Length: 260
Length: 139
Image (cartoon, each protein chain N blue to C red):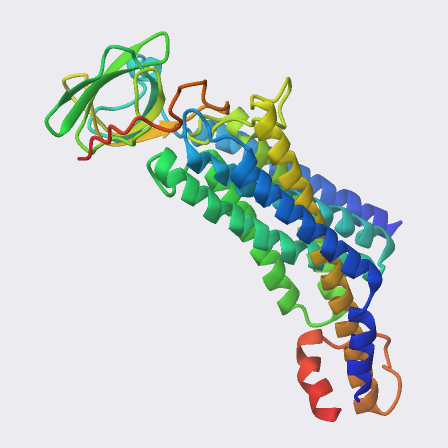
C-alpha cells in the first residue's frame, strides 16, 4: 500500500469529520421534513414559497463563506501562516458553489412569482458581481507561480472582494429593486409567521453544519495536497526543498502519481 | 511593520472601492422610475424604461389580450397599457415593475409586467386557498 493511501485512509476515518457529517445529514433530513410537510404554504404565493427554505440558507452560506475568506485573508496578511491561506481557499470554493446555487434557486422562484427568471435589479446584479469576484479569486489562485505569492495575492483579493458582501445585503434597502427587502435580518421583528420562521431557522442551521463539514474536508485535502507537493519535490531533487517554497500544487499531482 | 502598512493600504483600498461603488450605483443605477419621476419630467418619451409602483385598486381593465391599469406611488399616477400578459400574482394593490415606453399620449405602453412581492410570509387564513387565484391572462 502506498504511503499516501495509508495516510488518506487514516485521515478519512477521522471521528470529528464523521460526527459532523452525521449531524449535517440529520439536520438536512429534519429540515426537509419541516419545509415540505410541516410548514404551511404561503397565503399569497402558495407552495412555491417553500423554495425559501433552500434559497435563503444557500445565500446565508455564500455570505458566511466570503466572510470566512475575508477573516482568513486578514489573518494571513498579518501572520503569513499557510493555514490561513488554506482556510481562505477552502471557503472561497464552497462560497462560489453556494453563491451560484442561490442564483439558480432564485431564478426558479422568480419565474412563477415575479414573472421572470432574471432581471438586472440591484440585488441580482450585485450578486452576479459577487460570484464573478470569487470566480476571479479562484482563477487567481491558479495563476500565481509560487505558493507564497499565490497566498499574498489572493489574500489581497479576499479582503477587497469582501466589500461586495454588505452591498449585496443592503442593495434592496438602499436602491429600488424588484427583489423584496430582508424578512429576518432587518431592524425590527421578522415579517414571517412563526411556523415558517422555525422551518427557516432549522434549514439555516442544517446548511451551516453541512458547510462546516465541507470546509473540514476541503482543509484536509488542502493539507494532503501540500504534503504531496513537498514529497514530490524532495523525491525529484533528492533532498529537502532548497528554498523552503512549495512547488505549485497543480503541477505536482501528476508527478506524485508517476513516482509512486 | 511593513505587513501592518500593507494591511492598512489594502483595507483603505477596499473601503474606497466600496464607497465609490455604493455612490456610483446610487447615482446611476436606478432600476425603475416612479410615477412622480415621470410627472417631474425626468424621462424622455419614446425611451425604453421601467416604471414601478402599486396597481391602483379598481383601475384594472382587461380587454381582449391587453390589460389597462394605473400605477401609483401614492403621490402621482401613470396609466399603463400592457400587451404582454401578466404573472398570476398580478392583482389590484400589488407592487409591480413594468417595462416599456412612455408614449406621447402620457400613457405607459408596457410589454412586460413583473410582480414585486412583499417581504411578508404567512399561512393561509382558515378557508383561504393558498397561492394565486388562477386567473392567468396570457398574452
